[in-house]
Every structure is written in structure tokens, then in C-alpha cells.
Length: 177
Image (cartoon, rainbow, N blue to C red):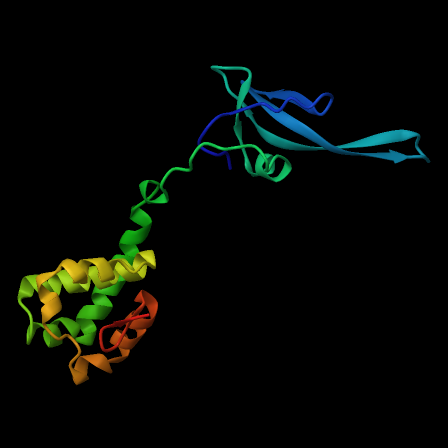
């Protein structure tokens, strides 16, 4: 797997080689040489560290081996993974919404909150579980529903609530872990 940026090809005398395959040129790094006395031959160990850029021949698109052999090189900032594939999270969201509906949590919450607030709360809980973050802490602080108590006994000890609380960092009773 190639990384999504270009780096300068390392300048290590005698250790960098190039191999052309089809219309691409691959960069290899020689990391070891083992002499075999019986055959009087040196076995060279090389690893592909990237693919040479077609636009600039002094640059390459690195792979994981490049990171292994050249850990000291500064890399450009990594792109946010959320831009990579939000489709992967959709399935998790759908499953969580189904579990929440089947558990009756929205019905329990609707006794104390408006339909809009229940939807916000449920979406926030699902988002927090999916991203494994504590985003609800900030949303609850700024939300008009924070003044209401969401810790009724029937909701506090519901199995899904306890599991969601453990995953999201909010303990039953509204305390933050």
C-alpha cells in the first residue's frame, strides 16, 4: 500500500536501486548483504520502498517499508481518515439505530424530552460509540437539555444504556469517566 504523498528519494550511496515494470519505476533499498562462502557469492537483500514519481524523478510515493527503513525522515501531515471512507461507518450507524429502537430507549427518553432532543441524544450516542470519542461531553454542556435529568432509574440500569455508557465514557448518572 502506497502512502498518499511524495517524499524525496533517499540519497544513500550504493543502497538505492531502481527497477522498471511496465510503465512504472520502483525504488528499492538494499538493507543487507550476506556472503555465501561455499558459492563465493553475495546475496543482496532489498526491499521496495516506493514508486518513483512520473512528474519529478527525484521524488517517490513511499510505502510501509520506507517508514520502516527511514523512520527519521519527516513526513507531510497525514490526511484525516474520516475523509477516506465514511461509508464504512454507515453500517455501524444503522446497526446502532436498530438496537436503540428495539431496546425502547427513544420511548423512555420521549417521556422527559421533546422528539428533537431525543433524536439529538440518540444520534450523539451513536456517533460517540462509532468514533470512540467523548463528543457528547461538549454537546451536553452547550445543550438546552442538560438542565433536565436523564438518569431515571428505568433508563439508568437498561443493559444497552450501561453498554453505551461504558463505550462512550459517560457513566450512568451523568458522570463522566
